Image (tube, rainbow, N blue to C red; front, side):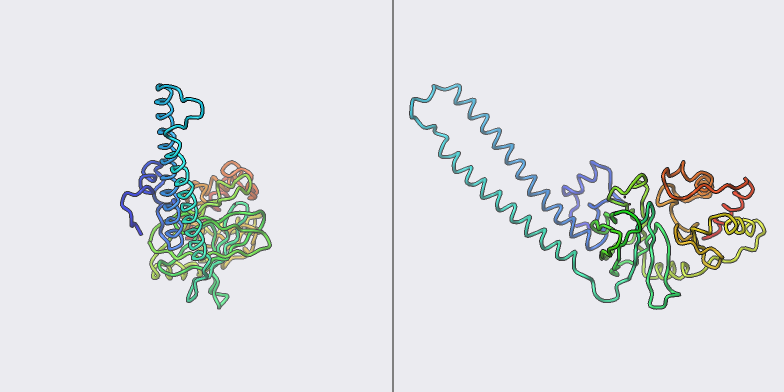
Length: 338
Ligand code: CUA
């Protein structure tokens, strides 16, 4: 993928320091590579045009100063510069039209390539955006083999993923810059996007359309991995949570079911069937908490449950009153859900 070692994109990366996990200039999928190509073309054409305008301006100032220094023109006398100026202007108009044509044709073909639906054994994923988290579902012809997770996306390398995008509340925008372009998620409508990752790694997605108070804390952890690693991850996700045996974890599980948590969240294998919030069956295996608001840790989880509104103000998770002992047991139990 890295065709240019130190082209303008790489220089810009160095300047902005945004290389790596969330950058449209470091493509790791076919779709992002196409967008980067048209981006580079636009940068070159617009950059050259800009430099030409500056050169033209400098020449005009220099010549005007020289003329002011010389004798004034007589009545009806034409300047020596008039003919060359006319030729330069004609050339400039031709150059502008040619530049715009190249950009229009280039973006037309990139757009067409991006809109192509990948045939074959594309992985089918449905992503539903909510305020402010992502529900991620991997569909399977056998319903019991489907997977539901939240705020994380695992993709096998070199296999196209056909993603259906929907929204539960307001309009959001799905964007993983290293993998592809933006696509809106609109309530009552299904949009589609294909991503074909070509490089193994960790990437970051982010909602790209203002959707309310916690728009900035609506991130998505994306893992591109080998087909074997993906199959192992998927198989693990299909397993329900093992029933706790340790008395402390049993207590935590009972707090979860007995308090209001189970009304909104689902834990496979337990009497928790809520659909309003993220599925928590494998919560502790995810890289981050509350859609990227904090890296996952037991401490962050405890803080999140103890006071959800201070970690992510405006989110829809209510405060649930617990005693310190109950909270500790609850956090121990959730932390065991790997
Ligand atoms: Cu969802 Cu911004």
